[in-house]
Length: 263
Image (cartoon, rainbow, N blue to C red):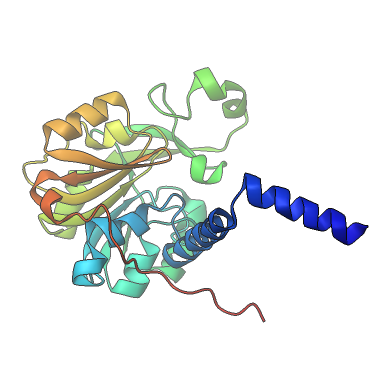
């Protein structure tokens, strides 16, 4: 009786969800897991950078590039530049004002760490929240850590006072190349502050990933020649118009590590 029920259920399943579809879904899930395990990102930003923007299919892995990671948290978990640095020999700038992360960054990364807070002007004293991990950042009505949505949390939050810098100043001090291959920008609502006064005529980014860009930032980046080429959940991937011709939006092949045996 039990075997007959199982056969009936399998027949119903084959009608509702064909076997080919189930196999395809299984392959897709495996692919997503392997991509995330390979690149260490959260929403596929680095996988898209490597396979689509830098066209792994046509040119292989893009090595020895330059990145800006703003901000990098602990530099390892759910990070958009760890793979680039450790596996492909990239270098760059790691921005992270939260002191809770500094020791981990120093022991796990080799790129330069900048602990000042990036904003729209230098030498301004701001309050910075450090007790809520990757959700921390500038406390302001213009950012995610604001009185309107997190007033109760902020009453007991751990805040520190920091002096601001600008992205351009730090790029100048570091002697960064005029063409930066990738910038990961995720600073909890302060993305507009970081870029609204940026001298785009002096530095160019091949690719930028921004979490939840504001409408103002979207319009600014378009004005400066950056086109939206992908929306990955709530991250937007922009490529400078100069490099649009080399983007591969439909690669047949992609780079990812195969899962190791689980024994």
